[in-house]
Image 1 (tube, rainbow over the protein chains, first blue to last red):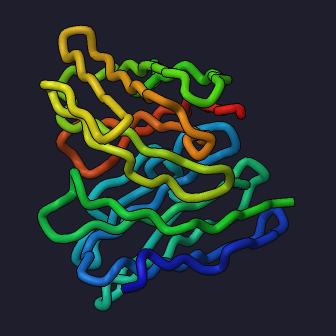
Image 2: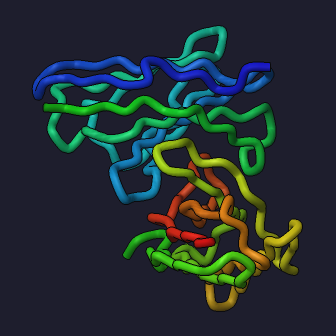
Length: 114
Length: 109
């Protein structure tokens, strides 16, 4: 049983470009959350998707947007990249009704903006 | 003020030693508490949930003090494989997890 799958694993982009990161949740999970982890910091909540809608959003600018597809997979899009967007982007999925206990994280996408 | 604050360490301990560290959280309405473990450049993995009465999982003991809003983790008989960053995580009955910046533990032979 595959866990949470993220792609790509590494990415280098130039300032001002746009990037799309992808996440496939663990089988049986219907909720996907995205987190940003800068070096030396804990993960910061970006947003959560459920039933193809953004259910909650953290303190991130509108440059960060997302989408959830009918098969529960999700994308994170970042426009107009800044150097400060360089981080590990983590996707976490959770099963129905178990938000507090069922989070499984993917291995992340390491984004470097130059 | 940060939602979750942790002593960053590092805690450098010999094998077999006991190491303990805390975190504090700012929102008294917080409902769920966890310790996650994160190895270098890897994803966080749930170590254990933290319950009000305190709980153990093998060599790991977690305590919660709601009045003082702090959570602790104690590791007994440390192993080399316990070397990692330990993330204190709080959920305030909404949909996000709030992470501390992590406490680094290094166990030396």
